[in-house]
Image (cartoon, rainbow, N blue to C red):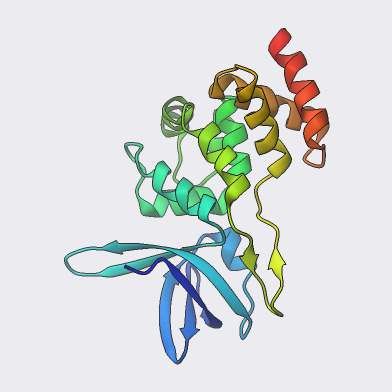
Length: 207
């Protein structure tokens, strides 16, 4: 099973890219968000989810481990296959997803093509207990490699993840903590630091 690929972007299609790894081209299915960040000839490192079927082997690529975790988790919901899961991640970042679930924002979830009102409601309802754990897991997600040997910060909002973890440590259950911090991020903005989010989250919980 392939878990990671690192190589040069050889071609970019509508929903996939060809990654050249030492002369071997791998066709990798990618979300629209990830595809927009690729450039021909540049080196890229992708976390891979391999799907093996009787008649095919498909590789799905992600910019981080937490994004792959969301891809897998989304598919545990009835009516969500790999195509819809990838489409959701093409519309929403992992943090956007966590916020939408915590705030029960079905309208945000339904912005993805192929996700109607009923499916959006099912996603919010059935993922409410899983989203906090995935958000906090973003703290330990490895940074993605970028051209030139540097690293890019994970796309998740680490301040939000840290704040959720802090509130959980204070005794609040994960769904409560996640909802409070999601409200704090919505009110204070994505650039707010951990301390501000915790203070705002505590006020939200005190209501």
